[in-house]
Image 1: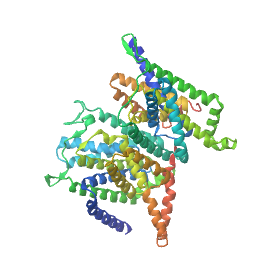
Image 2 (image 1 turned 60 degrees about the vertical axis):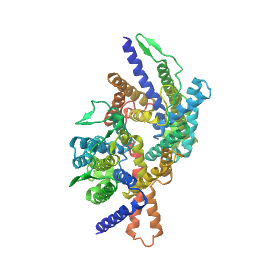
Image 3 (image 1 turned 30 degrees about the horizontal axis):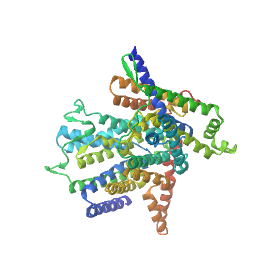
Image 4 (image 1 turned 30 degrees about the vertical axis):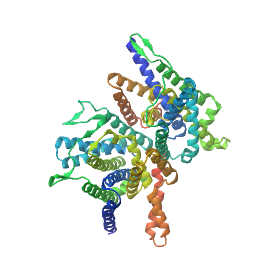
Length: 288
Length: 351
C-alpha cells in the first residue's frame, strides 16, 4: 500500500518535472513556432542565477521563485532582440542560431562559473511514508508544476494580453491591422517563455548538481514533450508529459533511471512516427 | 567531357594539397582534419543536396567507430572490420531513415528525432560498463570506451601499420575518393532526382518518383560516409568512447556545414578542416573557451552568412570576373541562389 503511494507520487513527480522544464519551450514553440535549442541553457542559467543569489544571502524561496525567472526573462528579452527576431518564419535557421547560442552559453558558464558542479541545499525536509523515506521537495515541485500550468492557462484564456497574444500568433497581419504591435507581442511572448524556463531552472536547482553542460539533460526531454504534444500549448504539453513521465518512471522502477530515460526517448520516437503532428495534431484540436 | 576535366582538376588540386599541407601543419592534426572533412562531407551531401537536416550525424560517426573497434577485436584482422564499419552505419541509417521518411516526417520532427536517436546511443553507450555488455569478445566498456583493438595495416604486410604519415595519406585519398564519388552520384540520374526532391517534394512525387525511397537512400549513403569517417577516427585515436555520440559532436558537424556552405560539397570539407584547425589553435590557449567561440561562429554564420562562406566567396569571385564568365555559369549561380530558399526556409511546409 505504502509502496503504491510512493510509486504514484514518483510518477506525478516525473510528470511535474517534464511539465516544468517544457513549459517555457511550449509557450515559445506552440505560440510562435520558434524552436529554441538553447532552452536547456536557459534552464541552467536560471539555476545559476538562483545559486548565485543564494550565495549572496538572498532567502532561498526568493532566489527560486523571483530571481531565477526575472534574470532569465531579461536574458530572453536580449536574445529575442539580438538574434531571434531576425529569424521569425525561418524555422531551421532559428534552430541553428539558438543551437549556436546554446554552445555560446555553455562556453560562457564554463568561463564564469568554472567546469565544476555546484548546488544549493533543499529547503524542505524529507518525511516518511510508512516504511519509505520521501523527499518533501518533490511535492513542492509537483505543486509548482500545477501552479505553472494554471498560470499559463489562465493568462492565455482569460486575460486580454493572452487574447492579443493568441490573436497575433494566429493572424499577425490582422492583429497589426487592429493596431497591435505584433513585434512587441512576439517579444513579450518570448520573454515570458524564457522566464518560465528560468523558473524551472530555479525550482530544479536544489535537486540537481549544476554544471555548465547540464542543459543537455533537459533539452531532449523538454523537446520531445513539446513536439509530441503538438501545437496546443497547455493540453498538448500536459498530455505528452503525462505519457512520457509515466513511461520513464515505470521503466525506472523496473530497472535503472538510465533505462527509464532511454524508454522515454524510444516512446517519443514511436509516438512521433505514429502521430507525426503530435498528440494535439490528431486529438484535442483547437484547444489551448 | 566536362566531368572528366573536373575530376582531373579536383584530383590534381587534392594531391597537390596532400603533399603541401604537411609542410605547414603536423601530420597528426592534419589526419584528424581530413577525418572531420569527411564527416562534414557526409552531412553536406544529405543536407545540402538531399534537403535532410540531420541533427544526429554524430550517431553514424560513432557507430562506424564502434563497429570498427568491436569487429576488429572479434575478427583480429583490420580489413574486414574496415568494410563492416561502413556497412553497419549505412544499414542503420537505411532502417532509421526508412522509419522516418516512410512516416513522412519533416523539418522539426526530423531534426528532433535524429537528435533523440543520437542521445539514446550516447546514454546507452555510457551505461555499458558492466561485464554483461559484451559483443563477441569485445566489452563495450561504458564511459571508458574500447581501447586496444587492431588498427589498419597494409593488406599485403600486416606488420606494417598505418599511422602518422601513412594514415594521413590514406585518409586524404579516401576523402578525395568520397568527394569525387559523391560528385559522380550527383551527376547521375539518381543525383538529379535527389536534387529535384529537395526542390519540390510534391512535384517529384507527381512525376512518379518515390520520394520516400530516394530520401532513405540518400540518408543511407550519408550514414555510410559518416561511418567511414568514424572508422578512420577509431584508427587515428586508437580508442572509441561514447563522446563520439555527444550532442556537441553533432552540433560541430552542423556548424562546419553551415559555415562552409550547404549546397556545395567543397564547402563542408573546407568548413570542417578550417574550423577543426581553429578549434585546435584555440585548444592551445585557455583565455577563451572553445565552445563559446564555436557557438558564436554558428550564431554569426546563421545571421550574417546564411549561405556559407564558400558560396559567398565564389559569388564575389564570379562578380569580379563577371565579364569573362560564361552565361551558363552565371545562370547556374543564380539558380543556386534561388534554390537555397526551399532548404533553409522549408520550415513552413510541415505546418
